[in-house]
Image 1 (cartoon, one colour):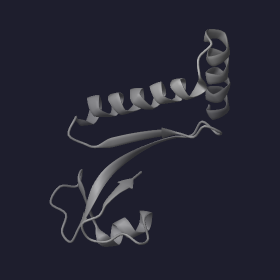
Image 2 (tube, helix red, strand yellow):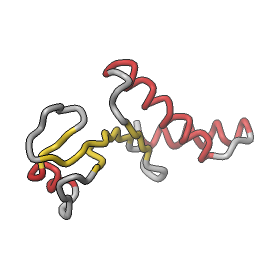
Image 3 (tube, one colour):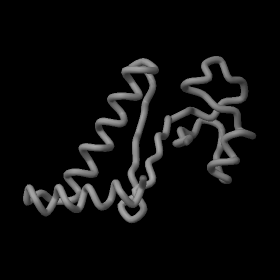
Image 4 (tube, one colour):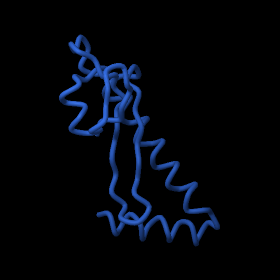
Length: 96
């Protein structure tokens, strides 16, 4: 589907005279909106679509803490280091 997504974006950009970046940003905003509709607006969500491959990823921002009290907003230091090797307590990191 990723190649088809890129081909579709290119086609829409050409047909409508739009900048590809505008289309990518609209898709990312739609992904965030859909996620928040399903999982609640409290989560700090970011969506990224790879401009070359079309791969889509959703990230949540979580604070690095010693003890997790809220799994949606916090992450332990050990777990955080799997995503950001130099993470420290108090950091806010993006987790896929």
